[in-house]
Length: 472
Image 1 (cartoon, helix red, strand yellow):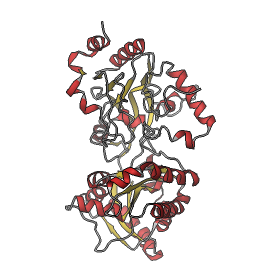
Image 2 (cartoon, helix red, strand yellow):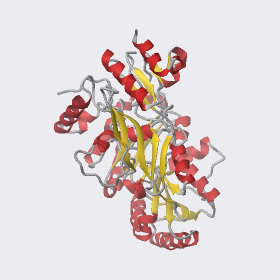
Image 3 (cartoon, rainbow, N blue to C red):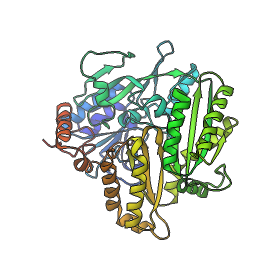
Image 4 (cartoon, rainbow, N blue to C red):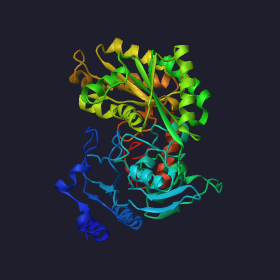
């Protein structure tokens, strides 16, 4: 029996996709990476995943796990060899358990993030992970990349939001780590090892997630700012004034929102004149909407007096709040429709962000005049999407020609400022070569040893995170 027949025997022939049926799963969301595969295989249970891995291990066939295919670094796209299978996890989408008393939700890896949010809401709880792609991205993909999103400031990233996971290892064995425990000091924390490993150490099939009380009120404010330094000062004031109630603090350059309103003219910035920078704040109040608004007016009034903001709009209702958030969440899609861009997902100490942005903007403009800086991100946790785009003076072909130089300039600046070249998107295949430039030899050797120990045949998403085969 050939491997395709063996896979069909496990999941059924309709769930082993080839040819035109497989094509949509071979290109990443950005259209940057396209690979080839023996087949796209769609298991419906953890047991089927385990059987598939055993067959592939025996035949030494690589496995590329994929969820909603919303990644930005090619981590879920096969290479061009055609040797791998794509393991499409979207049929593993069941809710296994809801435990309001323990504030936990156990779901399978193919569960859409928005469905997990809705399941929590149905029992009066909150699952706070929020991303622009939440209607399509899956919990498994969120775990594989240790996703962050807009509420990290208050609730943490995916690793912080997860109590336990279920994993199929490289030998096809199932590790049931779905314990809803907040304290468990019984050895190495395997959960944290697998989360963020991008499917290179094991295949996450389910997770037990933390739930939180629903806030009594959420209040949103949109502010015009004179500069990044003012934004950092406003963040400090907001943390002091709102405490743990400060859920989100998003920073956006004017160029980002100009692109949004140009591509989507039905959207509008709520000020009469443009500002160099904008901030979007959200407070989740445990008392009442009136209390939240009172705190907003007091803290943001002080910010206006101090010159940290030049104008402010506080949402009057849910519809206005959603419209303000929609501006922020439309940036990535608008940039994609506007033309070519280079995306950088970087993190820095908040104290260094002002200098980083000023220094890097100047370096780019000096070397590539006409390049458009399109920076936005989660200022509250130091994560910037330091993107650059084209203009009439710097067209698409120039961006393509100088892409490698732009990446290196930005990443060198991030490294010089003590930052990381990947905050929440992962490494995938886009940045795998960059790690050798910015990580120490000791770090890379340790990572390679872990990879060899857990995946000695190098069949789990090879060529992602670490170059394949893993170096000694």
